[in-house]
Length: 73
Image 1 (cartoon, rainbow, N blue to C red):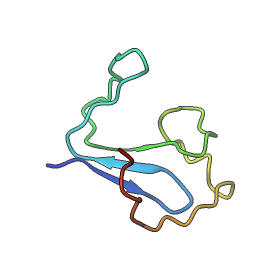
Image 2 (image 1 turned 45 degrees about the horizontal axis):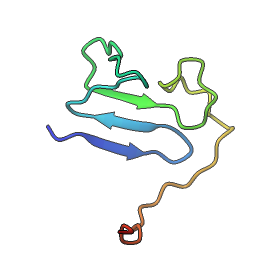
Image 3 (image 1 turned 120 degrees about the horizontal axis):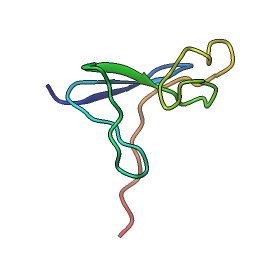
């Protein structure tokens, strides 16, 4: 399955598929066999980089797709 990243309204980034997550040093997080999880984007999770729901009622973003301008060369 292709990796899919969903930007949720007022919340996390949901990642699904075949993926690995590494820290700044390249160390792999142990995901316990999960193929779906949510990453924090509000900064309030006590389990960063993973979402723990702390954003509820404290984070406002309406996620709607748009096109980026062409890449500068």
